[in-house]
Structures are given as structure tokens and as C-alpha cells.
Amino acid sequence: MDFLGKELILGGARSGKSSLAESLADKSGLDVIYVATATAGDDEMVERIARHQEQRPSQWHLVEEPLNLAEVIRKNSRENNCLLIDCLTLWLTNCLFGDEANETDWSSCKSDFLQALLAAPGRIIMVSNEVGQGIVPMGEISRRFVDESGWLHQAIAKQSERVVFVTAGIPQVLKGPKL
Image 1 (cartoon, helix red, strand yellow):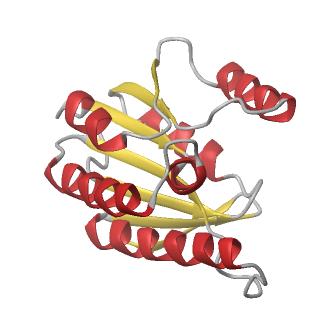
Image 2 (tube, one colour; image 1 turned 30 degrees about the vertical axis):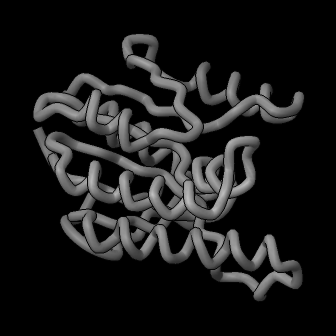
């Protein structure tokens, strides 16, 4: 058994971050619970979800939860398992801009998530898109998303024992033990 802590894997679109997370979860020797935050809002997203499902080992358990990640963590995190949460930026989008979104909900949802994460036993691998390395977006909504994403990543990185940035399929450990 290798690394057992909390781990944040960041990268751009199609960087290889999900593949890395899935490989780490598979090699962990633990029971894996895959937590999917995506919702199938259009045909392209339906195809993405199907592609991810095909890539995952059939013995992994699946929890689909677009909003309440804190409850999923509290209910499923155990010393002898691995939660793989993919993807935090989709979760952020759902919380900020989904049908049930409002300002108060995001603040409390984020706080509840961070508290659940801090108290959680077992291994938790979290995947998220790094969106703050480009130019500052022109639109208010886009700027808010980039800001909230950056603040969320910083808060999670503080709690994580390992943080990895993936570029072109090459992982770079920013914090914690080597891969």
C-alpha cells in the first residue's frame, strides 16, 4: 500500500490529469469509489461521460453527485478505501451556475466540503482543471469562475498532503511525496 492521504491533481483540459488519478486509484490496492460530478446537459457531455465510464475498472463503485460532495465524503470515506472525485471544476460550475445555485449556497457548500475533507479518513484523490494561468477573462461571470476556482484550489492544496500538476501527460509534484 502506498500513499494514503488527500491529493489534488490539477491540469488543463486534456492534460492527462484524470488518467493519472485513475491510475493512482487503481494501483492503491484499496476499494475505489469514483465520485462523478458531471451532469449530462448536452450530447457532447453525454459522450464524455460514456468515455470516462468505459475507461474505469468495472469493480469500482460509482457515486454520481453534482452538488453535495461534503455528504458523499462523510458517507463514503473510510480508512480502507479510495475516493476519486472527478471533477471539482464541474462541481464548482454546478454550485455557481446550476439550477439550484445562489451566492449563499456556494459559500456554505464550499465550507462544508472543506470541513468534510479535513475530517475524512482514507485516501481521497481530487481532480480539477487549472483555469487561472491564462489571460484574465473579460466577462464578470468568467472572472468569478476563475477567482472561485483559484480560491478553492488554494484551500484544498493547504489540506492536501500531495498536489500534482499535469501538463501533456507529465505529472509534476508540487507538494508532498513523489509519485
